[in-house]
Amino acid sequence: MTTAGQVATSRQLALALFDDANAQGLPLEAARSDIGFSRKNVLIRIVDLGVSARRLIDAAYFIVAQEEKVHDLYDVELDYFKWLMRYSSRNNAHLEQVITEAQRALIQATADADADGSKPFGSVQLIGRISYVGGRFQFRVPPDLIGIIRGPGKSHWLSLRITSLFTLSYARVMYDHLLPYATDGVTDWFTLEELRAWQGTMGAKAQEFKYFKRDWLAPAVDQINEVSDLSLSYETRNEPGSRKIGRMRFRVARKEMAERLLHTHEHAQSLYQTLKQEIGLSSAQFNQIASDRDTFTDERLEQAIERTRFSLKLGKVSKSPAGFFMKALKEGWIVSDAERQMLQIQENLALTDQRDTEAKQQAEARRALQVAVQDVNAQNRIVDEVRRGWEVYEAATPRQREDWRRTYKTSPAGKLTLRRLGVDPSGELVETIIQKYPDLRDGFSGYVFNKVRTAKGRD
Image (tube, rainbow, N blue to C red; front, side, top):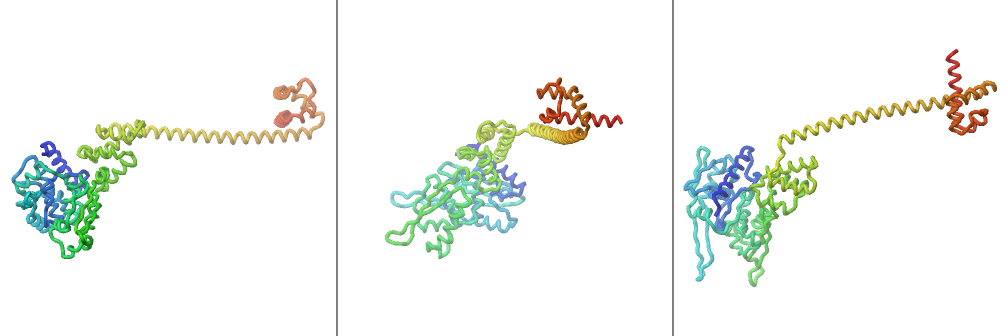
């Protein structure tokens, strides 16, 4: 039996989900966390009940299962009850029709046959008096059923978020009947009469298998596979000595925990992709999360993602991001406002430093370019002066040439050049020696140019 603490937690979760979704105008199937109750297997045999009426019964039984105490009359907010049953219409006349349908439906309970072959049978109304007024919804549930809903016995988890997604009544009926077989993986062989009886009433065409399959079976299986946490397939068996199909059995498998965890909501899909692709969670890690979704809520997952991203940016994740994420998730690590402010200040300082560095680099590049231009200009000027100096030397008289050669070898620049080239500065500097050494010729030509320019400046 569910403990009082577990009951309170589930009920608080449902109310919190309602408050959150109601404030945003969201229906039940958009809830970020799953809610439901442990429904007893005996409650699956419900006949002549449409989709909306089934949702009403599910919502009522959920409330009964999660209340701390048994009540003679259950009283909740009308909006909350509508939200649980995914009823968004403002048409109260239709709601009253749904209520009437639910009150007319019966639950049929059977047991294994006795030794003499007789099979015990019982039938009881699913729900009793229902009323709503002043924003409140009140209902009664037969005491016998309250004991079944809350008491011990074989049970299975009924997710209100999943059941709210069904739009085909037979899909919902099949889901109810096949969910208890999810653990075993395969059902017994059902006769076609039994399968048709699940719905309660079908048209005459449904008596022929090809029409039953086309109009009822195939659409129901497709919808179960699409929106629920089960994956179905089936096989058929002919009647003995006949080609006529008379029995069917189903193979029932629960979808992977990671897939069932987040497959019914766009936000959840985005969250799953982040955990799978960006963080790199393994199947085992997804299963850890899925096994305790009451603790690991979407909000807590998002906080752990933010913590992981924040620490990655700071270079504090040295090994596995997935491992860091799981530790952050389990220990409830968050990014504090002070840390956000610290990071913002650091980023601003880094941006300022980057801009200063770029400005300095640009200034240095401009200076280097200017120096390079100046160097090129200076080099061109020197080449021109050397050329013009040699032209002046060649045009001068022999006496002037000899005078320039004599004074050049005694000048500081001339002595240095001659010494560097290994030419004796005490000897006569003849033109053949100057022509022999290009550096000597350039230096001598520059000397002549400067001599002539200086003389012209004096004049």
